[in-house]
Length: 228
Length: 236
Image (cartoon, rainbow over the protein chains, first blue to last red):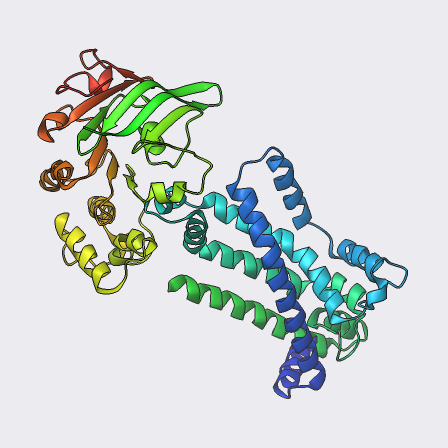
């Protein structure tokens, strides 16, 4: 237990001293996670909204596919995107491999199915009277969609936050597509994996504490919005 | 007397089940109709079609002399001339004012005009002083009255009411019956569903009887809740 306590104390000292490595890893993590979440939301919310609101023949298959994609292993996504972005790959000419952009691309593929599924659930759980009520009061279809979105905004917010949670906590994509380059593509999770394997347990723990704090802040933010 | 609606060979199916099958029905302007029928008779389905919220599976509707084209952009403009008050109305999050003003905002009415109309509508349903209350904190009866005020504020050509008095206490029922009965004289055609066989008389209205999706003659007995009473009628 002494080992854990001393590591914890050292981790707090590292955070307190604002170690450049910790700051870099936190900054990179937040930047790529935020970028991936924005694009995943832009992709996932309309998909979830469409699948939830519109009836079409292959709907059940699409829902099953979306559910399956939620369980997509991060290393599989890493492998797939690596294949596209590596020099021999179809997008190799762009030179994106081992850049933050590559991590964002992988993160979008990971988070979009989660955002879509949460959005789908929110739309399905919405009161069926919202849309016809808005229409009969004179709203256009687009306006009525806006009203529906407003009424289920907490569900949509939860979708975005779940997507962010998936990206910020994953390690496979960041490792395979970012390459864990210090000060450039090293995220909190890849730094934890690396430093722990090097025996720098305190450093790993410091980043772990920051990671948990970020998750806590995001959830506090959600709670705050729901109370308003 | 001008027909505001003319329905020809209207059918509505859900899967293989025919829920509405009306050969010919005219609804004349500035009149009040009570739509009477047992549960599942097709009353709400008919109101949704009349509100242009759900197209029939087959048949034609003429509104104000023009054939309704369900795929056309003009549906939005047509929908603004007709308002449906649902049996269990949905109130949006926010204040009572925001709810009653919803349709006014959609029609570009803002500022003092909006405020004045909202206050008048709330007063009409006996809810003066409720403007800033949270809509979701109202009782069932108050919510029903706010929804009624929201519909009245729009002064629609046609007001479709799906059991508007079902969840309201006796005192408020009297108030709302007076309001509803006065609407035809103010230029609004009213079609309301009800289970109360006294409504046609009390509201000075005419009855349309529905049975298993079909319009049936006034003198034909209608099962269960709707087993009696019609005052005249304007059936085809």
